[in-house]
Image (cartoon, rainbow, N blue to C red; front, side, top):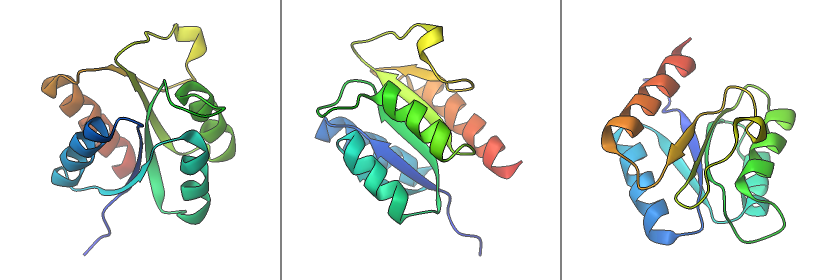
Length: 124
């Protein structure tokens, strides 16, 4: 049996993180969780199996989700990244290339479309 693809969810709001992790696990993903960018980087360094990073923009610490997305793109280029926020709508020039933005609260249909896109990229 093939291993489940691993996703890192970076979200400081516990209930939002819990809900997204539950959704991803039901969709067949192995999940890892972080509440800050620094914690996310430590997890990525320890778990080379992580193929997807799902990050909020606004987080405590020195690095926000957009900076984390750019860091991940440079350090682990093949990683699939999804950026989300309920408060900030990033400009396209602030987003790394080929990184979708998902507004909160998540619409089930939009989240499902993004997860289908991730699955197709992982399979290809």
